[in-house]
Length: 330
Image (tube, rainbow, N blue to C red):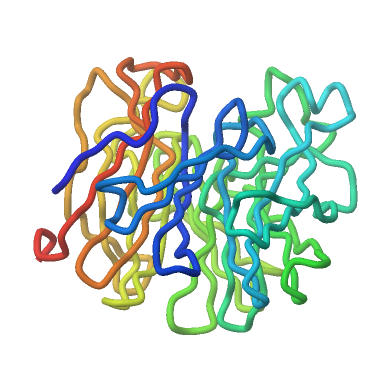
């Protein structure tokens, strides 16, 4: 298992997408914009790097290849409502690049109505139908406050059927059995069903199922992945036809959202029943989060932040890469 650090300080999460020239592009967000790394050897070495001054939130790194070959990202703009802006709630806009991420042109606003929205890294997904899903956390207006907002989220998707030109909102999934449904991520296997996983404060990641392409959702249920209220990723591997998850495998501690160690990898045949396969990092004096998965035929690329303290501190966070041979997971 190869380990390498790709970035230092004020880094949370990343996303990876194949470039048109057969290299890979990794993008992460930091306080000065969107950072790009280009590599032909799964980021063992970096061929080229650059920064595009878009956005300033460290958690939002999303890229999607459009049908015309251009790239789409999602840009956060803090809400004009002071109460929402105080808790970093935002509006989201598309931005497009025709030069493989060297520059972007701003597109349209995704959310038509004003609201308190949050988007995390590596979330945007194209379904088999061609529909694009953008899963977001939403805090209703009457619950917007610095005291309660982290425990009052619900989840849902904006969706586009015209390759990101226009967007519609699906139904919100409100917590019925959990205290909150936050930082959603959607995944689709070989069939038509869409799964949405969400973090909660109830000791487990929760999940829901959509049968109509992310518009409506079943009641959220606890998964078998125990977790504090902490970030995670769930992805479908096109090579093994299995689902993969990377998450903080621990029950909640006395401190809200912690402990974020150990960070582990699990696989599933159906996206619901999971089997742990590897412990990626397990230092109890550190914390880990906002992972990302990218699959190749022989290897699995995982990134996540590593923080040398047990508490959240953006200035200390490093973007860590693990390159796992598939043979290691057998």
